[in-house]
Length: 91
Image (cartoon, rainbow, N blue to C red; front, top):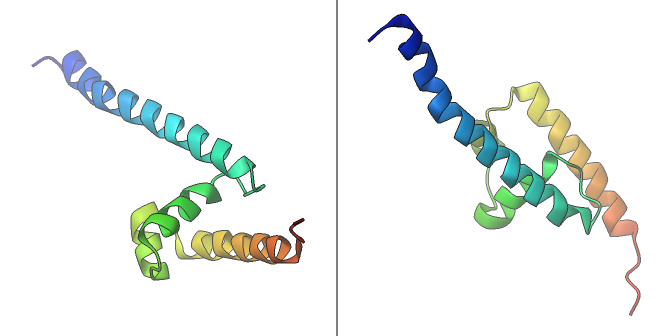
């Protein structure tokens, strides 16, 4: 195999994976817009909704977040939860 064909092969896999990830992201963000959920945090919310409860270590492993990033994401979600808890639902 020539050098050029080796460099092209990964793109045949990465490009469709990237496209699928973008489509999933847009879908989740659109779903979470109804409740004003934060953008990328919607991935985490969807995962916990499907597989939760789960440990923080599992979330880090699944999403590949650095420990400090995971802490920031969870802090933002905690703030979001407080806001949602404070919202009164009209009967």
